Image (cartoon, rainbow, N blue to C red; front, side):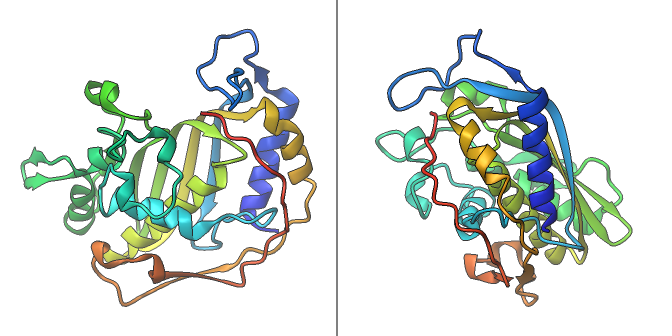
Length: 276
């Protein structure tokens, strides 16, 4: 069984059995018909993935991992806030008529700041520190910029990464304020697992542990029956993650720099409604 499957099943069972419904509250998300999209949730879920042992991708159903990587590169490499630079259409609902999602996600990572060592954006400061000061406990990014929230198409969900070197292992903590367990949980885990592998490689390190901290882990009301069915699927072994070892520049990675060898998954064709 993939460790990602095991963790996902455990999280969903915990939410469904001991979670709290928000049906008594006025919620922001809406379904396509305009009705409120209520959730059952757990506060403060923490999951740990040892990337040196296994790549954390679901086999209960297919995770479109290449599309997840596309979005990751759009945010962390291109540092773009325009959906015209992104393969796919997952951000279309939050973009304006020009394709911009405002001062969100990639925009924040690309803003330059002044440090004693020089001028860097957040990504380049991480890369610099890992090479020049790997013992630092200050290697992190944060895109939840309160001054710019009013100009964002969507407030960041996965908003902060903290990197920490232990020996030759690069470990990281992903902080997420909100997690739609059915549609986005494994998507985000796959993305940031790939990111840790990328940054570790160009920093001369090995990928270590990814810790995923979720403040509000929830299942939408119209997703409950789907989740119950999904977690009864038979988990399969995790695939092998293969990264192009010749890449030494973070910005030289492409979607074709990664492969999953032996990725098998269960068919699961349930139509999943999306709340916006």
